[in-house]
Image (cartoon, rainbow, N blue to C red; front, top):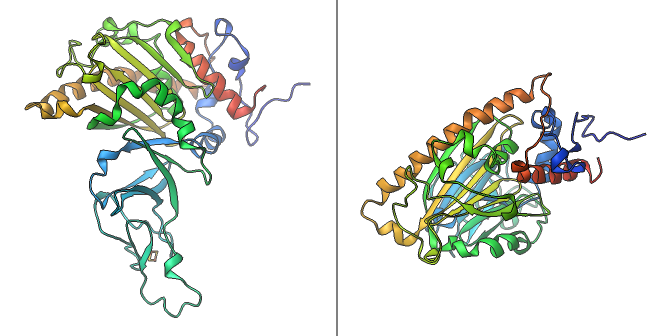
Length: 382
Ligand code: FES
């Protein structure tokens, strides 16, 4: 008798995708996108183990620059110390757990607003009043707990694991496939943040869904987009890289800046994409690099951030900001087209009469991602 896979008593309705060729496969059942048990396992299995993109080094330009953020519900403090090293900490006072910093800015120290314990830029406790009589209390060994942080070509990643997998190993594919984009010679020009009422997987699935581009986006970038499944490189992690033909992300498909100097020999239609599970999709165009994250906030909601980077040389344009605004507004038009589709899908997942449909050959990337996802979540032969 076959034992059904389960997570904390939850048994999914249909996860046969990993045992079925693309030509015969169905999509996953709706419960994979709505179940609290599945969501809890995803946080443990993916988001607590993988290196996660959280921003750019230029967001921490000077010593003392910091950001206090909630990532996956956890308070996180990222700060640059006096030596110029960017570090991440659990933003949790060692006295009673209060967040010691909020928002972002520049600071010399972080003083907890509750009882005043004070930490330096390395997270070390440097002030704690009225603790002299507390037997055995050693201020020198008390510090904010660290979170692993490292950078690949200007892009910052954190890892919540106590013993993270080696960063160089995690970045090996990115380095091999996308060093030619030289993201370290680009700078952050814009961040767009938005909330989508959908499961985090749907957001990335949409970004690797080339089936919908010619339909939903027919009036925007779809008419300048071309790819074939042969140009797809599938990764054991469930991720992918791909080269295809597209155009700069402007209304008429013409770059407002020209080509990045290191892509001068490429056609204007140069385009590439990478998905690195669980939270990062990267796009390369002739004139920019874009990284998109989708942080889950429950099974049916995610916080999306779109980081737009341009070559440093472009920042000297007199009208740089107004040109960036054109890219930003056009991007909004496209993601608004996607939003209504993704949120509509999410609603369907909770309906008892939703039956997963068949996949098209154009959905090869999604088939790959979800097959590896099922194996990681439920075992290799569920
Ligand atoms: Fe921070 Fe008490 S909780 S000083």
